[in-house]
Length: 115
Image (cartoon, rainbow, N blue to C red):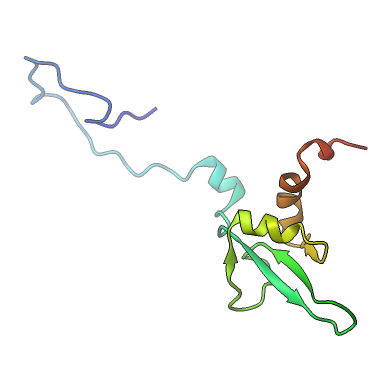
């Protein structure tokens, strides 16, 4: 645990701190979680329209770093993404993990352990 003065500590009245040895701390090493998981993905979701000419327009919801995301597509926040995901014409991409991340929020976490 790191203590940051003056947020967490105050000098004691009457104590001389001039002789206290101090040293500059080196930058902390990259966290173990960051080493294992890598950089965080950009936040948000991207909706890609799919028009195959054989029926109504459909959509696919992606994470923003998915290789299937069309260039220049706007980012959706999680609330808007969940609203779009409830549309029967919208598929959640399994390539980028969108389906794995949003499905529990759509259906609840109980279905994960079912059958």
